[in-house]
Length: 330
Ligand code: PBG
Image 1 (tube, helix red, strand yellow):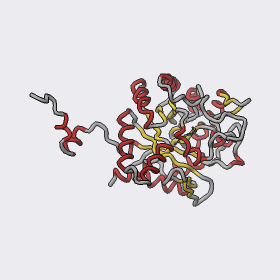
Image 2: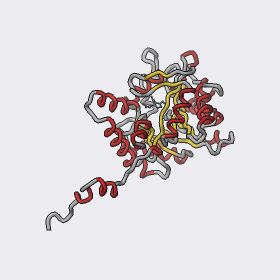
Image 3: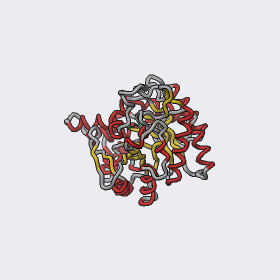
Image 4: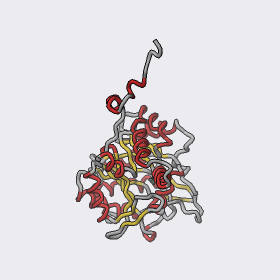
C-alpha cells in the first residue's frame, strides 16, 4: 500500500484542520505596550510605529478601558520623560508623583481588573540614554540595582500588579523581591526580562521615548555590556535559571520572531510562564511592508503571533494586541 501514511487527510478542510489545531491565540494572551506623555488630551503619533501613539494619562485611561472590553488583560507602560527631569542616577524614576506613578494610579482606578506592569529601567530618565548609572564611562551594576529597587517599590506603592525590569543588571530580581516583601508588597509580582538581547530591533521604541544612548557623549554607544549577544544561546538559559532562583514569577524573552529557538529553550528549562516581547522593529517591518502592499498585514500578524505561542510563549507583549483582538473578536 502506497503511501502508508497520508498526512493530507488531516488537512482536507477547515473543519478537520480546526479539530487538530494545536495552538489557538486569544486576546487574553496579549499584553499591550503603551507610551505615556505629559499633559492632558495629548495624542502624538510615532512615525516609525504606524498606529502607535504617545498619549497623556487621561487618553491612556480611555484606551485601557477599550482594550479591556476587547479581552486584553495586561498593559506594559513606558513613559516619555521631559529632558529637565533627567539626570545620571534617574532620580525622577521613584518620584511618587512622577508620570509613571500617576499613570499607574489612574489606570488602576479606572480599570482595576487590568494588570499593570510598568517598565523598570533607567533609560527614559537617564541623561545618557542608558539603562543604568554611568561612572567613568561604564554602566555600574550595583548602584544601578539600588536605584531600580527604589523604582520598583515606588511602582508598587502606586498600585502596580507586577514590576517588569528590562535593564539586564545582575542580581536585581533578588534585591527587588526582598525590597517588595519588606515593604509589604508580597503580592506584587516580578516579570523579569531575563533573556534580553542587544538588538537593532529596538530602534523605533527609542524614537518613541527619545531614549537612545546619546551619540555626542563620552559614553558607550550601545547596550552590549548588559544586554545579551545575539549569537548566544547558553547564557539565555543561565539568566533564566538565575532569575527564577532570585524570585521572578514570569520570564520574558526579547525580541520575538528571530529568537523563537531561545523561547523554546527557556520554556523547557524553567517552571514559570514565559512571555515574549514582539518588539517595535518587528512591528515596524510588518507595517511598512503591508503599507506597500508587499505583505498581507492581518495574515502576517496572526502567523507571527501564533508561531510565538507555538514556540512556548504563555504571554505575548505586542503592539499588534489591539489589531489582533479586533480581528479575533470579529
Ligand atoms: C528599555 C527598553 C527597551 C525596550 C523595552 N524596554 C529599549 C532598549 O532596551 O533599548 C524595547 C522595546 C521595543 O523595541 O519595542 N529598557
